[in-house]
Length: 139
Image (cartoon, rainbow, N blue to C red):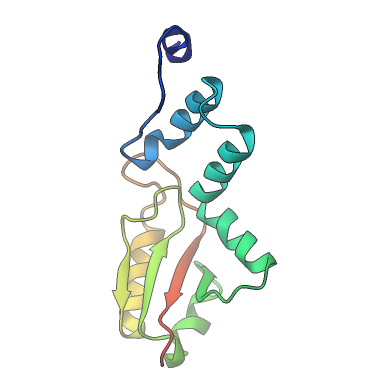
């Protein structure tokens, strides 16, 4: 409906102000001819962090993120002090809620427990069954 309304207008840009509206805006921009399909595909890929990580891993760029399964990998991770400090993040479409910087294994476990106990983000996104651990590289 919005694309039909916009079709008769001289629209030169579509702007979104949060991540929830990104995909509809990309689709509207494509429908209105403001961006091509390749640009739309790149924006959609960039929107999903797991897709970006897969692409980065395919081209062998160094990345210091580790996905850990909620139940099996966590004990192995928390026993390894070499990973600390780190940031624990939920893996969902909007992974900023519940992001915690951890300096010890207790904080890591608490952060992962928080994520496990919130299977749905406050805006309705469902999270994946992993937590993302962002590891600080020591120099």
